[in-house]
Length: 417
Image (cartoon, rainbow, N blue to C red):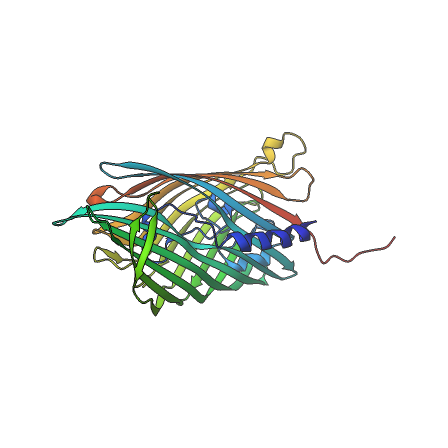
């Protein structure tokens, strides 16, 4: 049954991944959009801390973790995000529903492999602004699309407790932006349409180590490094004169020749390091830091004089607790309770203000009752991004997430009685 579910879900996710818009953030205008968390809900519920060598939950963040898998695992997750946008004078609300990831892990003795698909970044905004410089100008900017990542990971056990791994990622997607501008009391305006088709390869290398403090306590370390990579952006720009019809819809009239350009965007190298301490199948608490150098992600259509980029730094602390995973009664004692705190300096500076993000995460892992280690997960995240200072927009958001993880044993030798 799990094989049929994997095939059907892969096909479905491939179709919808191009169409979904996983953000409603005005800051997704810059660079390649709002960069998404690239992990499963289990790890997201711990604020992104993924340092333990888990044998039944997939860890997309570190390819070395696939060597720890003991069961064939298929996982899929999605989320609903409600966002309140506010400035010093105005408020607005936006909601989004999106698929977050699909991944498969296959244990092969000392080795483990995995593959999957997930969004890398999302673009989704609808901004209307009015400016006065002799005339009253009305601008409406919209954006959609994003970048997706298909990955193949390989992990290997060097010795008990020490795992290494690598993955190859194919990044692809399309970002579309429009800018409609009208001058008050002038019937005809202008419409600019920009389309960026993005493609590129990247790699990620990882290592994990598990050691003993005493007979009960373990310590964990995790390290990943992603070298600098390049995204090739093939851009198309079209400019039209437009006017509103009787139904208040924009109608294109004259058009200028379409302009096509090509630009290389640089994704900077990134290092992740995490440590943790805990008791297997009981509890774990850990901390993690992610550092990424300044990327060169401004494209031809989203450069701005008031925007610059800095290094991205992410700090998080999180963990889990299981009252009694092996109990037969009292189901609530088998639930995994997760939580975490995070702070993220996104790397974008607007009007001399660093765009920072703060959040708290909570999660619950609900084991299946059939004893095959499959589980369902629920997650909540609340946070704040940006600021109302310097004429900017602050986002207060809440995220409700669901996922499932199906486990089975493949490649076992059959016996005939």
